Image 1: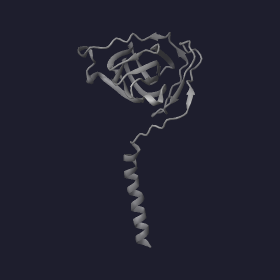
Image 2: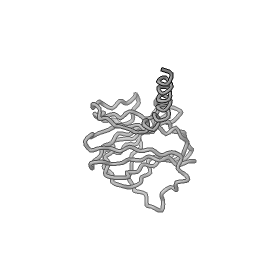
Image 3: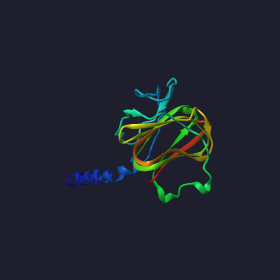
Image 4: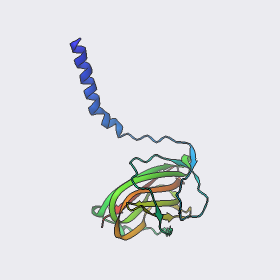
Length: 189
């Protein structure tokens, strides 16, 4: 009897060490389509679209209370010589989109201070609707992509020269190829 209890306790303890390894595996389940939720004062005036909402992988701490005037994305690809060096990047996260999901909303938790945001289409082609950047002071900047499609390349998303802490970034986009990878990076002050 003692031996059985001891073996059971060892197995339970062993599971405590193994569990974090399994927790890193991320499975994206395709969910139901729902309408994008925007708050009062939203600066883009067009009908909200139906999207598949992917759950945020981190806790969102700030809800936007005030919006800046919309920023219109220019879509100029940055040449290799102008890319920010890896040592000035303070935060990076990304999402892989699937063409079968169509329009998708995803949230990336930055919780970092910087002065410039970059967006990269690392693979495939992506049609963006908008990107919402929420700052720690409850202000938000919305970058309107006007539903244009962008191919592989690095693009300057938003420049806030005074330096700000970004809580999270919310994106509505869809893959125009079977799969597409979107990566956001923040450059430090």
